[in-house]
Amino acid sequence: MYNYSVGVLYVVGTPIGNLGDITFRAVETFKAVDAVACEDTRHTLQLLTHFEIRKPLISCRAQNEEIASRKILQLLMEGKSVAYASDAGTPGISDPGAVLVDKVRAAGYTVIPIPGVSAFTALVSVAGSGGKTMIFEGFLSPKPGKRRSRLRELMEGGAAFVVYESPYRIVKLLTDIADIDSERRVVVGRELTKLHEEVIEGSVADICNNFMERSRIQGEFAVFVSGIKNTRFSQDYDDN
Image (cartoon, rainbow, N blue to C red):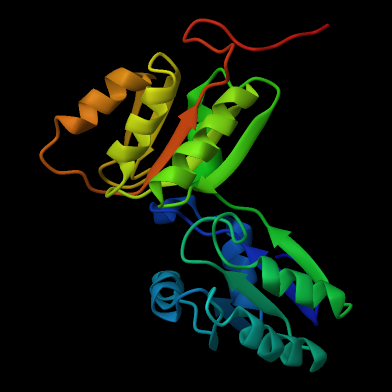
């Protein structure tokens, strides 16, 4: 059993699909705290119910994070402990949580991370050829001009990077990357850790054609784009 403190905010990573990926420490944290703040109370209620945990829930999503932070701070002032979880993965990584953490720390309270999975780290772990430097970009702008402009900046920068995308824009994203460098190596993760998980690797032109030929595209996507010097058979490591 872990030693949990009062007046502390625990930032808890949760599964991105497969519930078996939750950590023992995350479960123990949810059991120990006085309340659980979360991005979507319905989603987190299902997670807690699965592990037979019952706690008061506080809605803390991107749209109300400022207001919710005040409620959570009041609980901390009363000597209570609170866990925060986003819908899936690690809070603050393309998810709410950063505003809450800033306000809690500014008020003088302790913030403790309870590490967990994220689509970013899951994809990178099987991507290979990452090199020394890697950029996490998250979701790009849905506006075509801004998306292409940022992609060009990232690709000309030389480092590998990871972006997230929806099933509605994945072909547009891959097409934009191919227009800049059709031979750039990519690794696409679809529905990571879920029942229909898929990880495919190759030149962006080939991967783009693969998805264009599909009659239906479903699921959430994480896309790894190699650095300029990375190929399928070499890694960008320079000891000089």
